Image 1 (cartoon, rainbow, N blue to C red):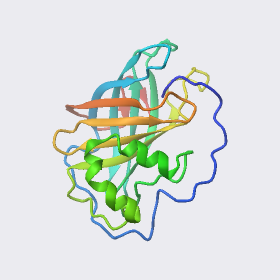
Image 2 (cartoon, one colour):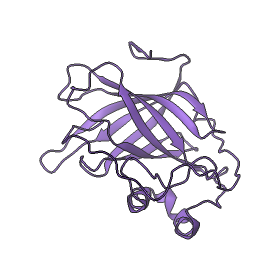
Image 3 (cartoon, helix red, strand yellow):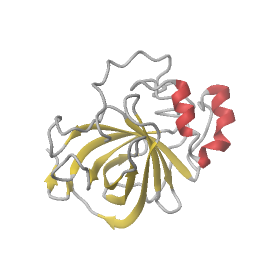
Length: 218
């Protein structure tokens, strides 16, 4: 949720789709740390050419369906300069599993070149690149891969209005470690500073329900 730069333009059509019904029928990934109620804490670097800046961020997963390649949660930015209160957003995620979703986004103004450029920021993506260049990764079985790749798209602000000075027009490329629950990500929005990095660690806190801090999802 970086600072809004300009109004978001209408997304252009893309040649490929993030969801592929003809993909290989691979098994869903399995990870005990990627479950509903799991909490994470860290920072998002929102530095620009004019200023170095990072926000403290908390994330909670509220729902996760590995078979359908879906998860959702909330993100709380704690020290946003333009806001008088922590800013909370609700997001939905796509899990790249070659069954429900591939590495190619096909929407949100992201081209295939944008996808490869952002995924390649993750070291764990490097062994997969050649296969993705061959068939888009459709023949992969990622069920036992030690990392889970996802896209997180913020859907709406929970506790502030759309005039808060921030934008949720973009989305996050996310890499999740099944070993320790750490998360790294990069925010993509053509109208925001490029490659804003998200770094989160699992807090080992797991809570049930659908509340986040003092806010309740409606």
